[in-house]
Length: 125
Ligand SMILES: [Zn+2]
Image 1 (cartoon, protein in one colour):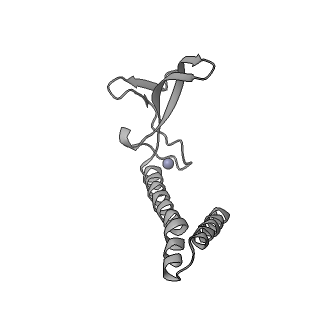
Image 2 (cartoon, rainbow, N blue to C red; image 1 turned 45 degrees about the horizontal axis):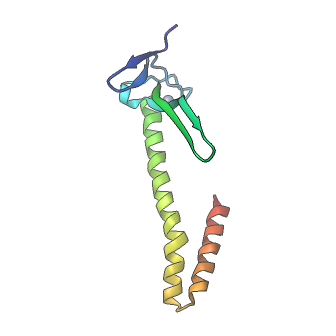
Image 3 (cartoon, protein in one colour; image 1 turned 90 degrees about the horizontal axis):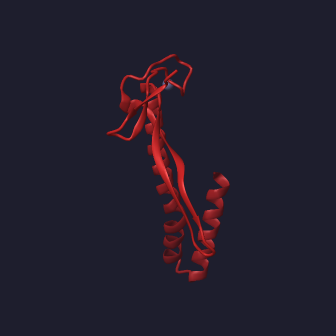
């Protein structure tokens, strides 16, 4: 039973079914752009020398049917992920730098603040 067709122009396997595989709401994918495409790799050639290793592989994307609701949810989660990354970088590096300059602390104290804020960030995650 075939579940996917090969789209050679896009170099991907497109799903034939439309039932969303991410939720149990019995919704269907409305267009191919809503589907989630995951990369799958196949090892083509491996070279192992004493000090050098090289692996050549082929990549193809496999489509997973996804409804409009799940597509929007995943897109929103991706945006939230970028925003939280930016906030984490700001919190880890720029706020300790700002405090060190504002309070006229030594450079070593700035690094102590960075380590503390990094530790607090890791602790929150
Ligand atoms: Zn869904």
